[in-house]
Picture (cartoon, rainbow, N blue to C red):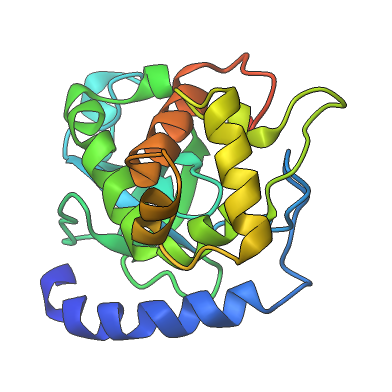
Length: 220
């Protein structure tokens, strides 16, 4: 069933993203001062678990299939209850908002990184790459707007490998003219792969529930 909707899904992605990014009512305040939606409308499947969640406390014979997934805005880790007969493949984008649940019956629960099945862990990095790549405009815009998270620390310094020289280059170049793409950031600064830095930061926030500063994810 999900396979038949791929083309329509991909065509609607940009439209949904553009509508949501222009809607101030669907927003939240993050660590950098940017405002984003407070809830997830879409999630990306990590794994379909036909025998239920590995951390489900219920008896094995009473468990139901679940889909472990990650939200595309807050990067919320979730378990979803698929509709009967629906087998959702990894890296598939699923509607989970109240009005677009075509493949699931409900959001079963929020989970943490330690609740992920091995199959979900293995594909998480690939899934983040898909999300960040498809939302390049959003993350490039973050580079254009990121500011101080404390009186002494800029949000850029929370990206792995960003030192003083990188920080100065990023600020100087965006003050000259806004960045337009990941390639533009890399070509004008000494940051060789900004996309990978974003993904590494998201992974750090997902794997460390005690992380003090959250640039992209929602606290578990």
